[in-house]
Every structure is written in C-alpha cells, then in structure tokens.
Amino acid sequence: MNVMESFSLKGKVALLTGGAGKYGRQFVSALAEAGAETYIASRNIVALGKVAAEENSRGYNVIAMKLNLESENSIMELRDNIISRSGKIDVLINNAVIRCAMNGWEQKMEDFDRSLHVNASALFTITRVFGDEMKKQENGSIINIASMMGMVGVEMANYEGTDMHPNPSPIYFYEKGGMINFTRWAASILGQYNIRVNCISPGGLLEKTHDPVFVKNYSGRTQLGRMANASDLKGILVFLASDASLYITGTNIPVDGGYTAK
Image 1: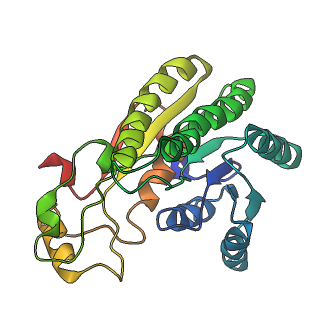
Image 2 (image 1 turned 180 degrees about the vertical axis):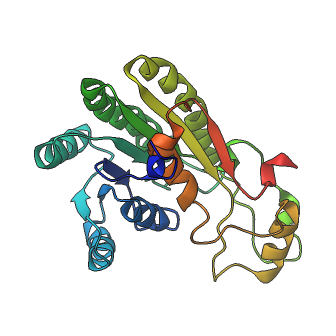
C-alpha cells in the first residue's frame, strides 16, 4: 500500500462519543475529512445534529445518534443501530465525559460515584461492547481521549497574576490517569484479535475566554510556546484510526506542545 493511502479512512466505520465539545468538534472533522463513515453520539442529540448537518453540507457522511453513557442499555442500543446500518465498526473513539464532581474535595460521595460511573465504568462497558464486534472481524482501532492532566499535577504558576483558580478537583486527574493505564490493559487483552488500543492526552486548548496572562503563563510552560488550536489534534487521531498505525498499540501519546516533557 502507498504510504499516503494508508492514512485514508475510506471504507471504515467510526464511532466518536461526544462530538460537539471543544476537542470533539475537530475530531468529527478529522474523521469525516479522512473518508470515514462517521457516527457521533451523546445525550445532546440537538447539538450533534447541527454538527452532522455542517459536515454533511461539506459532502461528508456524518450521522448523529443518541447515547446516554449512564445506561448500559443505551450503549447496547447504539451498537445495534450502527451494526444494522453499516454492518461493522472499525474505529471507536472514547471522547465523551461528564463533569459533575469538579468542586474539589467538597463533594458528596454520590457526585464522585456518578462521575466514575460515566467516565470509568461506561468506558469499560462501551469498549467491551464495541470491542466484541471488532473481534468478529479480527481488526479494529480503539482510541481513548485522556488528558495531560492524567500525567501530571496542577501547575500553580499558570494562574499567577490572574483571577482564575486552578481546578482543584481530584476526580478529573484520577479518571484520566486511570484511562491511560486502562488503555494498556485493554491493548493487552484485545491484541490477540488484531485490535489496537491507544490513548491521546491533549494539552490545553486555547479559548477566547482565557485570561491573556494565563495564556502567556501556560504557553511559557510548553516547549512550543503556545496552547493548542482547533486543528492540532486532527492528525494524531487520523493516524491512530488508520492503517498507518497498524503496529502501534498500548501507547499514550501526549499532544501538548511539550508540556509534559519539561
């Protein structure tokens, strides 16, 4: 195969959980532009419908579907709907999260439990459910979207000179760190079926609402001297979803401008 052709997703069926958020939106475009039949799924079907309409108006094939990660039945129904329409699943991107326990230590146990139910238990379940489909074809790529916050602690200096406060919640760091090691475990289990499991750990994405002082502090902490933009994650996603990465599994790839390398 020509090396450039190996990056193509033509003929592949991909599922991305989420798709309307700050990272998910560029993931949808990346999959569609690379040629995949792309399903996007979350609770907010209205927002996803708008995303799908935007991509379809550009000539791509994006389908929005309902998914409630708090429900195992919803995960199973999504699987059945995709298989009935497309007959297979080649790529699963675990991107959607719930952020319901973000107020530091002062949380009720129920809040932590709900967060872990979606961001950990549902991650295990959807990976198993769609992994079982990939086993039938003995091929597939599963990509988990973690965060560089799963690799490091809070950099307090990023917030100096601003009115911003660091997110003190332990749950996001805990969940994303766990996702990174779950990736290694799942890769060990699914490798015998020629299913690859990898992880992407993004750094901070520049937003219009960011305090300029924070942007300067954070950018100075990276080796490339800037925060991520709205297209920086597209290439790595297509690479891991495509046949260009057929001999890569169990990896965690920071896409953070060198933040975690310092």
